[in-house]
Length: 162
Image (cartoon, one colour):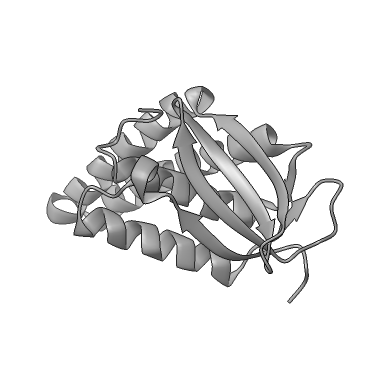
């Protein structure tokens, strides 16, 4: 495994606490998937692998990055405002998808799932753009990190930036 990767992700329960067991499960799965396979480099640094601690401050997502032994590397704040629309759309299409699973034909489910993946890709690209110049991630890592951001918001009653 390369040095430019995440080996752990920690969530600040005080500012990003889960609202229940389902939300906590979604977070754990998202973190597992992210840790399992990722490319994560801090621009201008070569001290990986890294540990990422996520918290929220004044409706912004705080990325506190450390080395595996615990040395501080960089902390930056990501405004969630640009993500509000895509996160809202993603939750809406996910609700439609879960409803379709119960009542629709396989063809209809597939069409909704394609739309869901498209919105997820849009959010992932936006995240990659917003991290440009700070964090070097590939598209697959951006997808996994966007999934985690959505899981964090789902755990807080689906209020992006709240």
